[in-house]
Image (cartoon, rainbow, N blue to C red; front, side):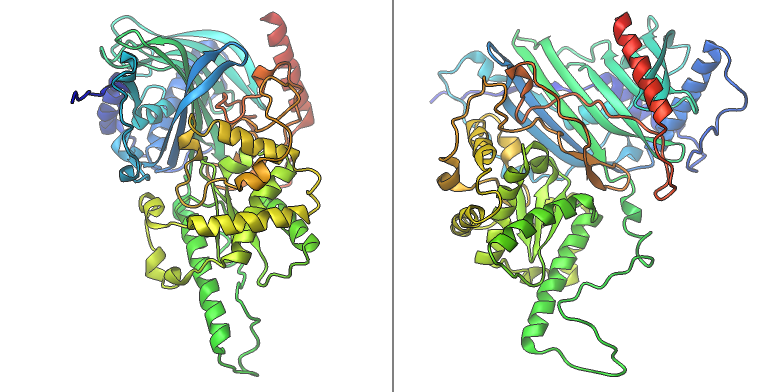
Amino acid sequence: MRIWNNFSISIILLGALTGVAGAQTRQTADQTQPQPGNSIDSAVTTVNQAIDRMIAREHDENATIRRYNPIIETYIQDMKPDANLGSIPVKDHYFLGQANLSKGVVDTSMLDKKKGKMAELNPLSHVSEYFTSSYVPEGFLQMIYLDTTFFDRQHYQFDYVGREFLGEVRCLVFDVTPLPKSGRGRFKGRVWAEDQGYTIVRFNGVYTPLAGINSFNLHFDSWRLNVQPGLWLPAFVFSQESQLKDFVGNDVRFKSQTRLWGYDLKNSGREEEFSQLTIEAATAITDQTTQQQDRSPIEAEREWQHQAEINVLQRLQRTGLLAPPNEVDKVLETVVNNIEVTNNLDIQPEIHCRVLLTGTLESFSIGHTIVLSRGLIDVLPDEASLATMLAQELAQIIVTKPSTDQWGFNDTTNVSTVEALNHFSFRDTPADIAAANAKAVELLKNSPYKDKLGPATLFLKQLDAESKELPALINPHLGNGVTLGSALSATGPALQPDKVDQISALPIGARVKLDPWTDRVELLKSKPVALLSAREKMPFEVTPFMPFLTRYQRPGSGVVADPAKADLAKKDQQQQQQQQ
């Protein structure tokens, strides 16, 4: 029997990573949080002054970033040309880890590598099947840095382009080019520096020159958000290649999204710990000075189960995997209540909903709490489709009544961020899932959504059609995948990818906005956009990031967006488009 070797091409920025190691010796001694304008001693009146301020601020920014250990998630889709849809995904890859930036570009994986199995190679396949490209997560983490060591006039040429608004933040725009013999891993592209503190808030380009024969320097678009006064931190990175060749001549086409969050995990929940203390008990608490009563065995069992549920939810939140309670939870709970009322259900204690912060499509229930992933909420086309996902977990609670016995002891949930995904599991057995699916269909038929399930059936069909190409997106890590069986997916209209007005699923990131500092989520308020062709439907696909940048405002400060500034930004953008 012939054995085939699988050769990998590491897509990683070796030259840039080398620069990071050297940069560790240059960390600033000042470990205080930067304040607005702390590097500005006088007004900037010339381009050269602006460049000097921007360079100094970027070195401060590099030192600041290295104080944090955020969660980093990278999702990649390999693409191929399609005659009708432009390009479509043919394979995907998913990385989730915790960055240790104080030690350089270190990404500690949160995923259990033992769960994955290497696919068996077909000996009759084309040679390109054996020379495959492998993605290295640290290569995408490196993209949060512009240049950690040599960002200065001795290594770069700066050409002023003009001014541009990114959202409400006015920026100075520069084209940045490495000088000859400036070394490997230098950045070449465009940077946007906000015009108050001169922090670079966006940079778009590539590291150059090539790091090695079998390595690639990938194009990327990196964004930072103003998460605290004077503090801008990396939040999004988009990367894409469409005309790249590997060393044997194969096409390398891909798109990727990298998200960072969990910057303030060490202080998670402390601000509200005493000011908003709430009691979550299965039974009402009375004044113990006037009445003392032991719990009955049934009451004790209920309270034990409920406390175990709280233990799990609190730990998932503290590890950065679960969003704190927010307005999105209330939207989900409203849909659940609609299903309950029309089915004459009176479930006690009440059902609550939470949002898992990861981008994979999954859901689960723990006690009387339903958890849907950010990624799943993102791609659902409408409220009825959301109702189908919630109905599945509501049925799980009704039919199987998932036990929380194993989480009643506090030590069982005391794990670190890196350990959490391998420690917890809320997956149900195939038999329980089948029973819950049957009940979910029954609940939906009696719900207000019974005549609006067309998009939900299309969503299931689209998911099934792309299950072979997108296993990393569909594969759950904590809970259950999206499965409602043939009873619902076999109904409804046929899937027509070329039909512009048939929306089966949304692109990734279409619904939920994540605050990388607090881990809070909210629904995006973007207006619906009329599609020009079927190529713009892009179900489950990766798209570029274009966040609307704003300057930090303290919660409850009463400061709202300046409509005049927003109008000015809009006019400025229109003028730039006309000039182009």
